[in-house]
Length: 401
Ligand code: GLU
Image (tube, rainbow, N blue to C red; front, side):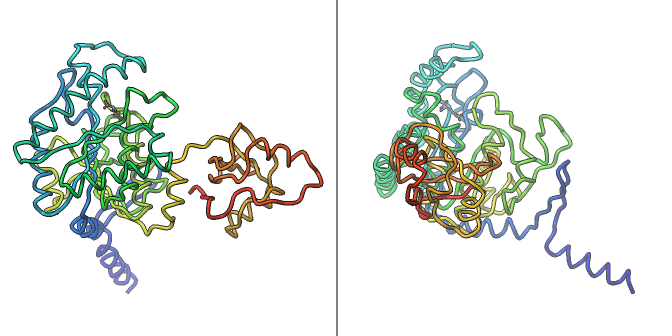
């Protein structure tokens, strides 16, 4: 009887677990249902961001791979016909510049990368124009720095331009404005840029075309036995533990930054996939239900657009250290941060700046917009008989996971 019950349990489990994966951090499973619901989200999508990595569209030191680019253009044109609009975020400027100038030195300094990107971006956009021309589709070039997305009026302008281009049926091709982006104002890589663009639009899906064919239980360059994960229901610590931190040879982002991008978009209710970008008809195969790449299911969106903006777009300009009581108040009861809970501050920042909030154990708790400059806060903190004040309003405060 016991055995019978066990058998029943197993067959019941089997109806929602299709595959178990193991790595050093634990066990992970997925169900085919996850892939099916991903496809449902994607089939309803009106605007899709397609991120294309350098290693997908360029050959080692040889410049652009027109075969792959033509395949991508064919697939995007098919999406257009099914009434979807596409925004491309493409890397490849540095790789194109390197091939154009036969500049094969490695590693490259920042100014060499910037100069190569300036040379290569022209080739890159010309190639997109050429491959889309055969389908009578036009492209537009947009170059962004992280400052463009962290300053509200520039962000709103970029968004408006993108929407106008999409209503005109033009394909925006976005890259980082490498020429002016210093280390401090760089997006960490184009995976993160594509996630920010997805959130800013907002788009209904992010598809990352990569030179690797999805997320594996471990970095397949370290362990050839690693298995591809078909679907991820939630990007959590177990999932992050599967990613190697090594970037690819040509691009800057590795699997880790793709997962960060995944966390950003899926926690805002948008699905994402990592796909083998050089595989012919990869998008068609994904849409037709083939088990290809790794798909990431969207979670229920918990943050308002304003909080998403604070969490992902704004670079912190200072730090605020708070005591246990204040930590409890903001974490447990969702209260605003008051002056009396502040122990100390670090950095020089103006009123309205984004600051990080640290708890007693120096643990990063969240980010928020301060109502006071660092100068004012220092004055208040040295005045023992001060009245209490609201330093960060709860609507301007976002807790990290
Ligand atoms: N913006 C760089 C380029 O076009 C690539 C950055 C990245 O790979 O993330 O070459």
